[in-house]
Length: 391
Ligand SMILES: Cc1cc2nc3c(=O)[nH]c(=O)nc-3n(C[C@H](O)[C@H](O)[C@H](O)COP(=O)(O)O)c2cc1C
Image (tube, rainbow, N blue to C red):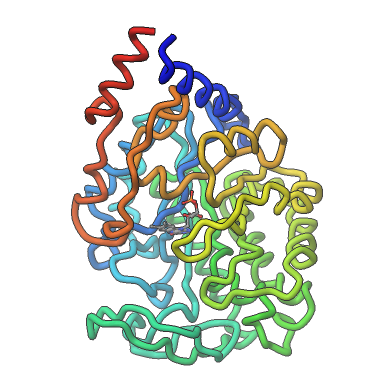
């Protein structure tokens, strides 16, 4: 066997645990452990996902693979980025339907990530130019892109939701989940990570409330748990996932005790038979990868009885290790999956990867979206496949 054949075989061997099948609590049988990450790509038009999204997602869909949609906004006051899709109107449901169908036609399982950005927005995104809502009035430090001025603007202060208003926001998540299922999605992932609305309640670095939604861990988890219960009651707990980022400081979402907060939450979540809990590990800070710390979610693994997805800085080898060692059940891939529509196949073969282009993550059109080549479409890939055939 030529030396590149040896290297490919070793790489494929390291990734092999990723190709063990897995059964979700809903009974859905996954053919492998590789999950397509929720990835905002800013290609919607006036909040409506476009037909090119069907091409994009179908390119990345595999028989028996789990995919999670880009963050999909639950109400007209929940946007904070340009060209992000919604799931709060009949038009959204109708636009998502063929996209979901295209993914199902390839045999994949598709969850919709339901999202409200809370204070990570600007009055320019609000229907009536009002302040964005949050757990707090404090502004996010830094700036966001304004669709109105087409430039970066400082975040404004937020409007803290009153306790009386919160049930209406819980209900927006419930209705969005119903809409997602009506559009054909197999379930929803509640976005409780990365400093957005739910995380703005969870983290004591943001939540400064003194009512039943602030202060103690139990109080800060109340909104998240109410959303989980409402969504689970609406569509069935086994169709509901929750994404958390205990350690992330994105959008100032720091917590002084990330372990105890999340352990409390997971103990409560054990009372539901959820599809999964999805934890973003502290491996990515802005554009930089941090050192791989394989024990970062072990305390959560010990507490949470259900399916655990881990995300953040994974490649084929450490993803394979994560499954082999029981660190998590499923491994989520973001940036590599953007650049490699056939990522699972490449991992299985030990094949080289296309490099992602950060400059086109959030731009318009096909470039950096649907034009990343499959393995056999590059010279490097052709040479790899020829060498494999010769071995
Ligand atoms: C372009 C881009 C868009 C993202 N959009 C979302 C999103 O909509 N929802 C979310 O929960 N995380 C989002 N993330 C975070 C990813 O899901 C993932 O956690 C992160 O990229 C780390 O995984 P990776 O190292 O495999 O890329 C995004 C990341 C990138 C690079």
